[in-house]
Figure 1 (cartoon, rainbow, N blue to C red):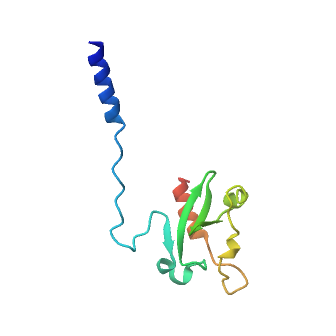
Figure 2 (figure 1 turned 120 degrees about the vertical axis):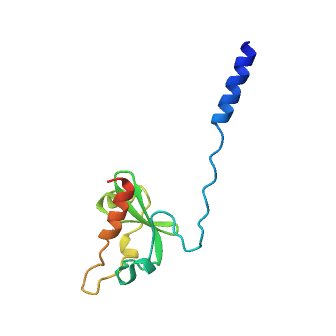
Figure 3 (figure 1 turned 90 degrees about the vertical axis):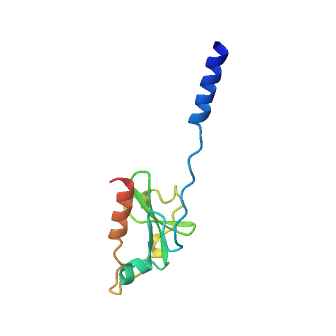
Length: 118
């Protein structure tokens, strides 16, 4: 009886550990992962010198823009942890607005904060 109970528990545990189904592949090459943004989506309002990237959230509502293997801080919380997370200066890819300042990145910060759950 104990062996039968042991075998039943073993099968139950093996069944609980079944792997999750694979994530579906994007249907087209133009689909972007969640958080993906591109210059083609924003036109003249695109504030970066790179054509596309990902907006993500790090702990503490730190919003970052990832372009390839490089990440840049978008808000103050991200700037505060830039050294810890090896973030590069946003100024490296942040376009000038033509009036002596920088282009507006607030829409991208808002996207990131939504990803943070804030």
